[in-house]
Length: 119
Length: 105
Image (cartoon, rainbow over all chains, first blue to last red):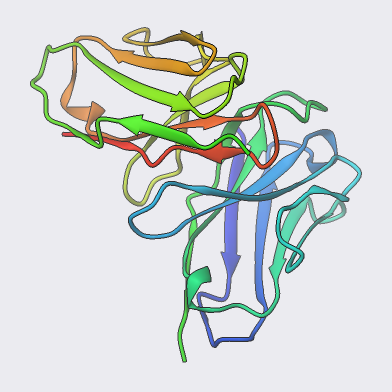
């Protein structure tokens, strides 16, 4: 059974760097594409970006975002620089459904990490 | 990018009812659409992919349909456990985008 465990700092000050880790159990990080998604209260989820099986960010709308993998630890990391209050929300990691396929639905999700940005 | 809208925003129904949720994209997305069920404090759950394909392990009471810009999620024989917020997501073009959700009560 595949499980995604998330952890990272939940309270940040403006201008700090958000860093979240998604630990994968039961699947190999280097076989799949992985995405990060966040949900701001009262709005639909927002896709942040994805990383390919080789560990490189494949596409990410914001230049503040870096996504990469640690294959030895079987983890995916999200870093977001210069956070503001607009970055407050619940952050999820998720797996693209088929091994090696980029364009796919997200079949497994972590439970989410709540991040609050406040001075 | 292809913005997504969902209607209704909230839906009240009774046990045993059949309900249909609507998702509309601004551009054609050629069935590159997924539906997710989200409950507070739980990991989101994939229900439907490619507009109409039921994810393994998901109840057959859930079904998806649609094409072009208009897509639908139908839930039959509603159960209390179906109370959740349902989101559609297009993965036809970057940036992938989600709808604002339909809260089913």
